[in-house]
Image 1 (cartoon, one colour):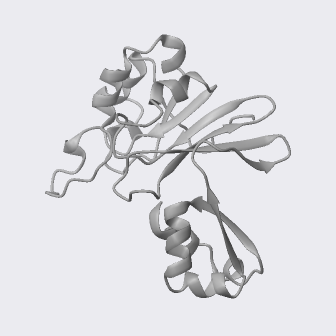
Image 2 (tube, helix red, strand yellow; image 1 turned 60 degrees about the horizontal axis):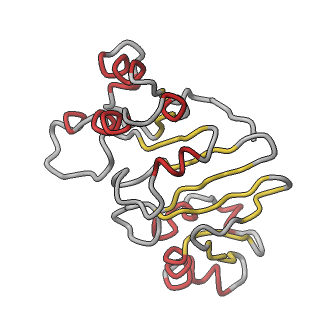
Length: 197
């Protein structure tokens, strides 16, 4: 997310650490270096922002690397997805985006290059928020799967939707929306699901 919000949830123990690396897009690094209370942590050397560069891999551990890609998002320059590769598998982690179109690297290209893809499934459609007049930018799963039906079956079966809002009917196994999603060849990620890298 933008603005270092995730860092703010790290807790007192993490924020009291010395030299804690924080890999983030350049826009988030700039926010950390210029916004209280983070700029104080940076100045004291407790938080060390490390800018992630678009499409440049970083090592996460032995045999695991992540490559960041920008996604269209209302917080410009602060939201990315990751292509994560290990010795035995690869995945795309893209749980927050305003849209699945208009990506610099097309989504289908990213999905074709991995074994599993976790994508933003926040809302099924605008009826998920019937009492709200505010637009909450996220791709609607109902519309996305219609567009993604053009993908081959081997690409569709890789997709697991995540980041579901509590009003999303995909949370329940026997809704018409869930059945439509599964008939189209897609899935919803299960709580505790794992994928070997």
